[in-house]
View (tube, rainbow, N blue to C red):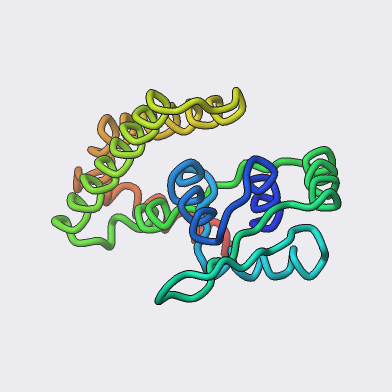
Length: 189
């Protein structure tokens, strides 16, 4: 699923401007599908050009006109079709994990800082999701996704805490480096 499809989905719930959509990506979608203005506004322009959304410009005093988007009937059909034809993938792209893969090359203090910061970010995600769930009335699907995000974030934080010794114990790091060298040697044989 791409940003355009998710914008259609959000607009099927209520009309919104680009800022409103960005806030949803930063809050409700934060733990599984972040998107910024650089992808949201081009998506909206493309959807409008295809007649899947309509845009109403609302004048504002001292500011540019506010563009409010609403989904069209064709947009609703396209969204439902995308939902029913998409083979959903659960992908994980993590700069944190990419960095940790090479933990033996990271300064000890920096490594500890990264681990601590990531655990705190994960815990903050759990707190945020739980706060949102207590103070909102969402669909069953939105509640399921929030709960899934909280469980994954909580489990990731717990894993880091209980396994960080694998990264911070110099003997383990050295052994991992030797194992990696063995793998490279085996691959080249």
